[in-house]
Image (cartoon, rainbow over all chains, first blue to last red; front, side, top):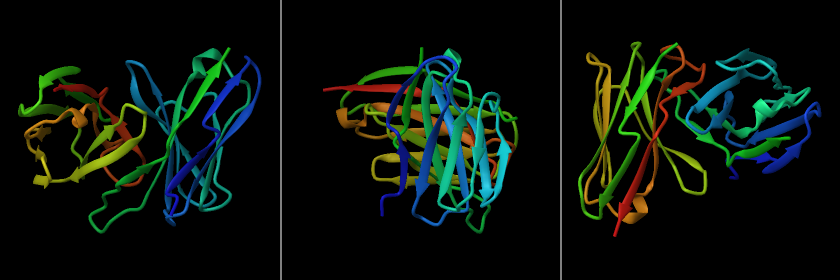
Length: 115
Length: 111
């Protein structure tokens, strides 16, 4: 099992360019998440999905869109990149146990720089 | 939204020392997570606990639900324990809607 994978690992964009980050998981998890990590801010939730075809906003959703067309994939899109979106992006997936707790499994991260 | 506070932010200790990292949160939760972020950036889940205490090897996590406080302890610390340790709780108390995180504790264990 590969677990959670993210594509690409690194990317440099110019302001105004668009791109899509791909997250894939092979654990048949229902739930998937996108987080960003910035120095001094910790990890913050961007968007999440509780199942195929569903998405919801997290703490910092502005400037991002997401789609979950297949259960195993969760895409994060930047339509018009801004320098403030320079960050490390982590995807995670989870399932819910009988106690309603969700241990999350993280991808390796994507380092994005917007010039 | 749950607020998470961790202390200390930075901790340097000598090999063999007993380490304690603290976490407090503002809203009642179903479970609290402790995560480890390696120097290379990867994040792994160490513990998920809703009451009492859990132990994995030299790591021990405790939680007091009434006081909204958790601690992570490392016994007989070793340089390979050097990492960032992150406390996290459900974004809105429970369920599947993601986590909100503390800012992390950067731990360095010197030989």
